[in-house]
Image (cartoon, rainbow, N blue to C red; front, side):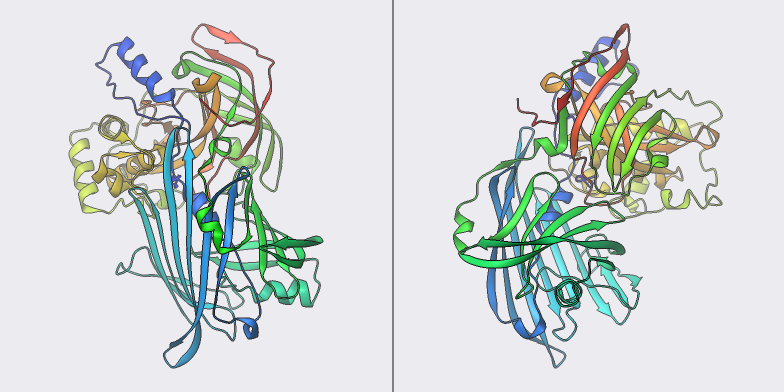
Length: 542
């Protein structure tokens, strides 16, 4: 959700209980699943690592090699190495850009290396790329894509050799790369404009998204032994809410430095950066301590939480935060959420569940949740066959969905990082929360039940009580609407009220980015208390 989103969450392991197990065994298994915190998917981090930008005019693009250091929470944990060279493509002079980004990371007890490799073929006359490929690697998670630009169409394939998608491009679309951004130098250096919005083709998501750049000011910078006058620009993506700040060399157009949420910094460096990196911990971008321990979180039936969050991965709206089982009162400004959530999920008992095989295709709002998509291969023949096998003989859609949910909970182990997609998770028989959710969504869609992956954060008693990023599912049950379930937590036919929902999973840049959270009130069985302690989000160190 690697998350997977996909991809970052509170919890590890998964509950293997069935309805036939004793209450004691069920409780023990569920508690094990919430006593650790782990990452669902590191795609958001990988995308940011590969976006360290360097920019200039066509006449200044000469063969060379450039280095950036990557810091997270003040720790130099990675580097980017960018090389550019001339090339010929169909008799035309072009620029070849190749980039490798590597980072040493840990999150909530797990250690892993992340590597991104990118290639661009760039037209020196326009600065637009005509070809791009990428490969993101993290343990068993391997994600690749190839993009070719033909006129006003982008031809996209998720892996080399796969069928291509044709994506129409507006005439003024910006085709950015990681080296050369002539539109920023033209508009902010030459023309001194205060703010400009662009339609930018985001290669990782293979879609055009609107971003706005705003001039902040200027300042001198000295990096890698060189002094520069830097123009500071803020960038806001209006689809994902992702915010970055860049320092642009006014003389050359090179990007000197970039910052992003999660205390992340990328800046120009010398070649020695490759040998100086250390492991960085990502915990404080994934979770926030609340200092309240609830012994049995699966028993939480009500929770009131004050939160300050700045999530990325979707554009947050009040309507998206106010859904059945959750109420939000507060403010939202450019994805900065400040307010109070009240969560009170009720359990669905299957009353008036749609028949298995009911036709939902006439409802346009449901169609996308019946079709395959990136990470959710509901048309995969192996997944379709397994879903049909599991649901054979089900009396209705709810029984079928519960069977599928139970199968995922019992047969998919917990692993960080996971397989990344539903099919890879099925093959590995392991994955994090995003992987579990992707597989269940694929299973449900394969038998005609609308399903989607949602994300936010979940309470766990770990580390003295925390909320951490997490992903789960919602399954459509006709008149009853969308029913949440969480296979990773062993909640195969419900979710407890410690689940705070941000929205439907949409983007690989999904990240919670908690600033502060406070539990104001809760009910969990016979326990109910009104704590007053408030903590700023802090790393969840053991």
